Structure formats: structure tokens, C-alpha cells
Image (tube, rainbow, N blue to C red; front, side, top):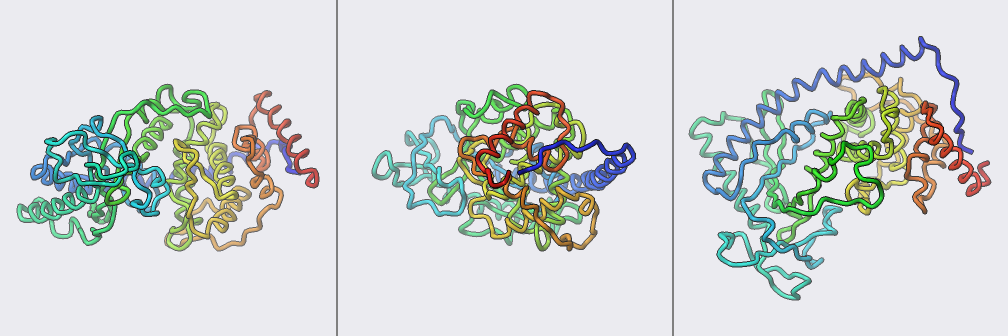
Length: 450
């Protein structure tokens, strides 16, 4: 049966040495952020110059100077992932009709595309004729005048290329500042490589239609549990639609998720430091060759949001090691079951369609959970930890329990996992009692493990 007993407290000297190791590893990560932000700001300045030129030629493509969330995300991420940049369109989104797309129009390239839609233009004469066309929509059973992402992307691409040439002629851009070689005809985003100092950053430019909506109400929890009051409402009061196919749009949660992360940053405790640390491990030790694997920074962002909800007490976030383990137990559960629910759309599994390396990643993450000292060091050019991993069968069995009634996706279950890794130091008698009750339930369901 899984061992929930609390361990004897370690000696003071051992605790101080362990704390120093965690904080030394984090200090190296933080020391790199300033330089990364300098690279980002220079690349952002170049991009804004380009977008201003696009706007001058086509005022319907707006320039959003409030890019703090993109910079915030770039600073957190250890790897050189592309920066998603949403370009707002000068469109009255509230006047558009949201219509269900015919399923045959939507390619199966993105999990969110299961919920695609068309954006119908209500009346002619709205200066959108060159961006619209007839689309088969389910409500009408025939053609309806809708905004076509394919047309908008094609126009935006042409204006970007023209703006690059224009800015180079005026010496607003230097040779090598920007490359459009990754612009593809069939892509749902327009990729530009921009040189920020000596570092090249990829920006994936995506047109977005913004529309007011009722703030999201999630039935599974009390309002804003674990988050600053009102943060969920503020993050979801506006819907963002981005291209899903040449004819259909999908709802994007990219900026709402970043807004929630920004809210988490205002809470006490090393929550974002835990995300920084785990993402460095993902990039250095868990991601396969050159840090490329099925586990992404976006997955870890979702894990942090879930941990904020499932561990709402400030007592859970008092030290760096304990905070990291709050994320770890949720990550391990998701890797073991190969199911990571989207925080805002829990029916969506973010691990759906992931590569076959999730099982290997699980072993590496569990190995870190049992012996973090082996991983808390930098390899400086050598990717991947070369040691062997021996999975713990009791932990694996506990992590793979089927979640039939929701008992294995709540605080008591993850508290039990924390005790399994001997990092459960919560004194709340109610929570400790809930762990004991859950353990009794597990023993009854799986008597052969008792």
C-alpha cells in the first residue's frame, strides 16, 4: 500500500545544505533573465517598427504596444521557443455572429480545433468585403458571408513582406535584423526570425478577433480558489479568435492563461520560481535531444495553474523545494495517465496526440522527484542526464489510479503524493484527516496492495 507516513524531520545542517542547492540552481536561472530580456526588447523594437509600417498601409491591422505579457512569458521560459504575437484586427467583434463550422473544413492539427467556428458578417458595407467569403455553416445549411482567416493571413503576409522592403530602404532595419524565410503559404501563423542583439528570436504572428463575452464560470470550484480575487473574471471577459484553418477560427486561451500567470505572480511564495526551475530541467534533462520533446513550457504553465487551485493555502508555498513538489506531483499524475486537462477547458487533454516519449519523460521526472540532487546542476552544453532511472512501482500504481469520481484530482490525493515523496509538512488537521480517509478508500478499492 502507498506509504503516507510522515518522515522524521531532517537535521538542520542537512536542511540548510539542501536549501542552498535549490537556491543556487535557481540563482543561475535568474541571472540569465536580464540578458534574455535585453534580447527580447531589441527584437520587439524591430518588430514594432515593422508593424507600424504595416498599419500605415492597412489600418485594419492594429499595433498593440502593450506587450508586457509576451515579455513576461519569454523571461520565464528556459528554451528558445517561438513567441506567439497576436495582432488585433480593427473589427467590431461584438457585431459578428459566431457560427459552427462544417467539420470537414477543419484539419486535425490542433486539439482546440474540435471547437472551431465561423465568424459571420451581419451586414454588407462594413469595409470587410476583401476579407470575407461564402462558407458552409451548420446553422444555415448553406453559404454565409464570413471572415476568412486564409484571406486575412494572405493580406497580412503581403503587407509584412512589403514593410520589410520599405524599412530596409529607409535604413530602419539593418541587414540581418529580420528574416521572412519561414513564411509558409499554408501556415495558420506567420513566422519571422528577428535578431535581438546576437540572439535570434522567432515570432509567430497571428491575427486575432476580439469579442466581449461573459466571464468564464468553472463549475468545478469556488470562485477564484487560490487566485487573486477577480483574476479569473478579468482573464476571461474577452474572447480571442485566431485562425484554425483557411475558413474557420478557434478560441485562443493564450493571453487569458498569461493573465492568470501574471495574477499568480502577485501571490506570496516562490510559485513562478518553481515554474522557472522545472522548465530549466525540462529543457536540460527531460526533453530529449536539444531539449525537444513532447513536454513543453505550455504544459508546465498549465500545471502551475492547477497547483495554484489545488493548493490554495499559503502554507503550501513557503519554501522553494515544497513549491516545486506541488507542481511535480500534478505533473507526474498527468504524465502517468497521459492526460493533462486544460485549465480553462478541462475536457481538452493537452497530451492528446503527444509523442511516444511521455513514458520516458515520466521516468525522468519521477527520478528527479526521488533524488533531485542528481539534477540540480548545469551541464553547460551537454543535454540530458545520462544516469539510469528505476521507477518506483508503488508510486506508479498510486499515480495511475482511475479518476472515476474526481477523488484522484483534488487536494487530498496530491497531499498523499507529497507524503509519498516525504515532502508533506502541512499541519492542517483537516487536510491530514482527508489524506487518511482517502488512503482507507484506496485500500478498500485495491485490497491486493494492502
